[in-house]
Length: 138
Image (cartoon, rainbow, N blue to C red; front, top):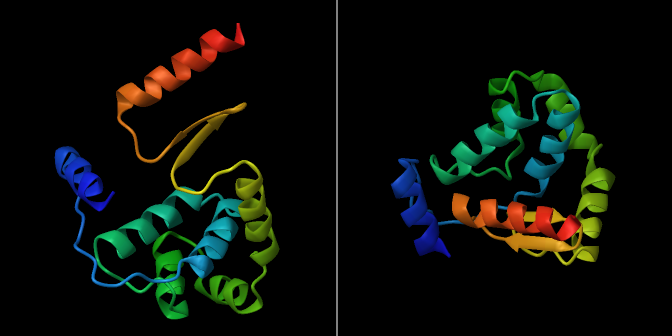
């Protein structure tokens, strides 16, 4: 999986750092859920992705997450309060439970009705998935 990730990133000209550690992303996920409610989900998720995969930032640390939220245009004090109170814990638990019920165990997973494609895929694979799904729905 890592080899494919490196190859695809290289083909697309995306920076990808060799990681020596893995950090818990639970709090980042909760803060991301909050960022989505503020209309800044994409900005926050992109900032976290870059911080983790390119810069090697420990995204389990509150101060790092608050800094990423601020960089994404979100209020830092509110971000810290969200993290301290775990205000989006239940929302993320719900999402994870739903993913489990749908049999999703990897990211990304693309789901349409009862059909799924798991993992980072080429444009051609995703196009075929969509076209095949459209044909089956007719």
